[in-house]
Structures are given as C-alpha cells and as structure tokens.
Image (cartoon, rainbow, N blue to C red):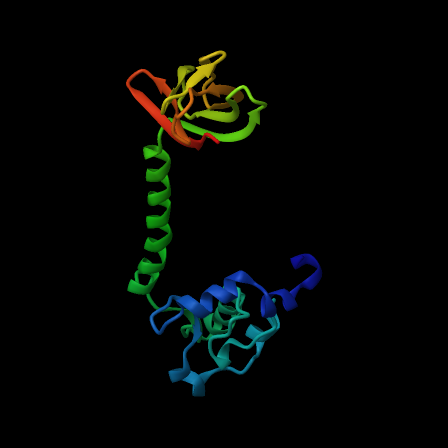
Length: 213
C-alpha cells in the first residue's frame, strides 16, 4: 500500500502518525527546528527539498513526519561550512513518564496473558445432551476432552446423580490434543432431571452438569 500511496499514506492512515497524536507531549524526543535562532536561518530550503514527506519542519511538529532525519542532515551540510550548529536537530527526552506508561500497559497485558496460559487447567472437559433414545430411559451425550499438557493422559469417565454410564468409560488423549466422543447414560425411575458427567485422572476430576430429560 505504501508503495502506491507514497506521501499520501503518511498524511492519512499511517499508524505511526496516529500514535504520535496520542503519545506526543512537550518533552517528546523529536526532530525540531530551533525557533530561538530563526533570524539566523540560512533560508536555503534544503530541509524541505530533502523531506520525503514534503513538509517544512520549520512550521512545527506535524504528524506526517516519519522521523527520517533527512532534514537534519540537509541542515548540517549547510551549517557545517560556516562552523555553526544545525538549526534542525533532535530535541526532547527519551525517558518520559507518558512513554513509560504507554509501554507498561501492553507489558502488563502480556504478563497477564502469559499467567493465564500458565495457570489454566491442563485438562478441559465439556459435555452436552444430544437426544433421548426411544423409550429405553437412556440419553446420548456428546463430550470433548482437551489435554493441554505435554504428556499423554488416560481419563476415566463417570456419572453422578442416579444414572448409569454405558459403553467405554476410559479414553486416552495425546499431548496437546483434543478427543471427542459419545456417551450413553441410563437412569432408574425417579432419578433427578440433571446429572453430572465426570472425567477423572491421577489426582483430579473435572465435572460437567448436564440435563437428563
């Protein structure tokens, strides 16, 4: 996009320019013209001619500036011949409270996300009711197990709430993988309308409450 839009990109949708509007203050390290020496400026306009964004830095800070420092080099090439300091130079400070705050916010968000990944359970279990099997008193459920650890895990499936689980009750989930399947559960008359499906392993049990119509 930049190759086709050229300077128009810098003047309109450039994200760097938008960030300048938010983060810029009086102490921002930026390229600036020394207004106190304006009367001594050589008026060669070489800074404008060299600027790829086509701006005049002598008019003050402008969001189109891409901080390429071409204007500084142009000014220095003229002032060095006369033994004077360039009128255009970097001015401001690198370490500023506003910049530190802007950097600390995404850093804190990144640390929080990393902590979330580190502390989330190694095993996740989900289940849902699918259908009633005729007049047999049985229901079919779909389930999914995610193993977020680096080792294979064998889990035993069970049920609580006055119902009986039928079929294969043990599954093995490879490392960092997901396994899905179906379960059949049957209850005696008078059992509760909700049951709890359980996936258990060494030292833990993950439960999911589901309906039993």
